[in-house]
Length: 127
Image (cartoon, rainbow, N blue to C red; front, side):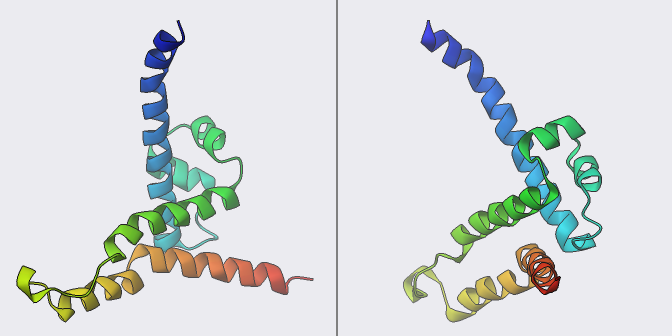
């Protein structure tokens, strides 16, 4: 009987994962484009196209959501950055490796990280 319960729960778990990913992608976009102060849970919820209850079920606080969003994007980008030395036999060159690294500094991960670091610095300066 446990197997039928597991089979029935798979679609729910898959939907929950998809919802979580949509929320995290929306949070990263808001953080990178709008900054920390304008990345409200309402703005993120609307951008993700989910209910507020769904967002709060996954992430009870704004800070938890934004930290998870940056971790989510960092994990996705890590796969892009794991490259060995260029292999001329496969048509790879140093320019491609440099371009991959440069993309990290001009993309949403960098912008979102800077926003969160600024927020952390502000909190540490506060009495």
